[in-house]
Amino acid sequence: MSQVEVSHVTKRFGTMTALDDVTINFTDGGFFALLGPSGSGKTTLLRTIAGFYFPESGTIRIGDIAVQKVPVEKRDIGMMFQNYALFPNMSVADNVGFGLRVRKVSRNEEARRVAEALELVQLGAFAARRPQQLSGGQRQRVALARAIVTKPKVLLLDEPLSALDKTLRVDMQIELKRIQREIGITTIFVTHDQEEALTLADQIGILKAGRIVQVGAPRDVYDHPVDAFTAGFLGDANWVPDSAMSGLTLPREPDGFRFATRPEMLTISQDRPAPGTNSLPGKLKQRIFAGTMATCIVDVNGESWKLTARDRDIPQIAANDDVWISWVPRDTMAVPR
Amino acid sequence: MAGTLNMTDRRRLAMLLTPAYLWLLIAVFLPLAAMLFFSFLTKMPQDGPDWAITLDNYSAFLTNPTYGTLLIKSLQLGMIVSVICVIIGYPCALVLAKSIKGRAREALFLMVILPFWSNSLVRIFSWAIVLRGNGVLELTLNAVLPFDLNLNLMFTTHAVVIGLVHSYLPYVILTSYLALQAIDDDLIDAARSMGASKLTILRRLLLPLSLPGLLAGVVLVFVPVVGSFMEPRILGGRMGTYYGTLIEDQFVAVYNWPLGAALSFILLAVVLVILAVASPVLKGART
Image (tube, rainbow over all chains, first blue to last red; front, side):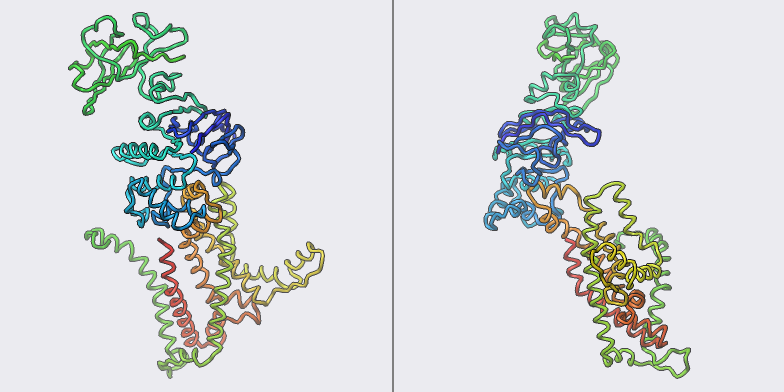
């Protein structure tokens, strides 16, 4: 287990710059998410750390060793692929033991460590099966066991949960977090699912067009986005129209800043709220019921605002009625322009 | 599968399959049946009314040791050509499937299947021009090498092998290529991430996963090579007497069709036995 330092890394494919002077530090034992839209370079960054690509410039250190010119098979990493990439011609035990056999570990030692890794992912009974005989979630666990059995310095996950359905995905998130804590391995995973990143990671790096836009703890990044892109990417952001700023209590002077709130911070009412809260008049456009939660679309000064709350907390208001939208002043985000 | 089909589906299936089966019946099964019948005759019916049923043609194979010797020689030729085709073809397919991308791959592929586009007789005579003494190969080598080389490959076993390998190599390349291409590149990346060298990846991953394709290619080479007669005759000359040329002689030179037919069916039986013995290996490779 080691920390990973990426500094000033640039990677080009032909004329396309996939990573543009990326600097990011992954501390020892942390759980990191690289988050970004498709084409943002997050997978390229992961594969560059893994050693599948060599950067044109910059350095990558795993532990104390500069590895930017070391090929993947010599980097001592563990990696999990989006489609699991289990070897179909081998049993589960042989899949997990592959990396150990490559390292010329004795057969006894291999058997012991394979059993241990399968136990960790709760698949001890499946050692003799073929990957084709397993369900999606089980394959996932085998892939994880295979990635960690060699005790690599860093665990890299490429969209590890995207192929699972939603309920299974939530289970696996919890499982993944438990295993990561248990073995304390530095883990970097790539995802385009902001909820997954917020749930799993203790640090999030947001990428856009090959650049790191922001790095921080989930709550920090969610509450204090550094630009409009990050604010909108991590969740819905309702932007306060410039014309409506005068009556509101804002966290700072408006020079060079725009202000926004998250949908779940808002309250909707027909009566004007008491002073002391920030409030704006609008028109209810639509109310979307989704089980426990409901979403309201409200037209505020020509901008479409989104509000989410428990369905029972939203008063019965007819569409196109005039409403007030209000929120506590400290829930206002100040985002640099 | 048939159990789940309803009447309409069944009728449609029958209608779609009928032409294919009809074609097989007329083009393959009937001539084969006729040949099987001929192989038990003393002489062809058109040569006279005094023909009879006999097993002599088959017992001739046992009494005349030359036939058995030639069959073994042909089986050896089939094995040698198959092995060389694998040694050249599999690496070729590996490079095509896993190393080369885009335009270059298409161009190389074209060159692989190019032999298929030319008439096989033309191809063989071209080899004759290349391989004969004072031919293209000898002149080229002598022009490049500092010492003079006397290279007359024409009418040798080597010439036969070279001609056959050239003719049948594309089968091994194509079947291996298809099998290799179907292997997900992520599997290779995963193996690399676990520290596997290129050799380990080839030995433990690519070879086992592409073995069915490779073996299919070997079968496609081995079977026709054992019965081949054109390459041995033209490139082998005096050395080119094989089981295939023996059968050909019975049909076109000696006009002993019953013996030719019997020898053909013995070859068919031997090849089927070899494939049957090899089939557990073929099946095992698929898992």
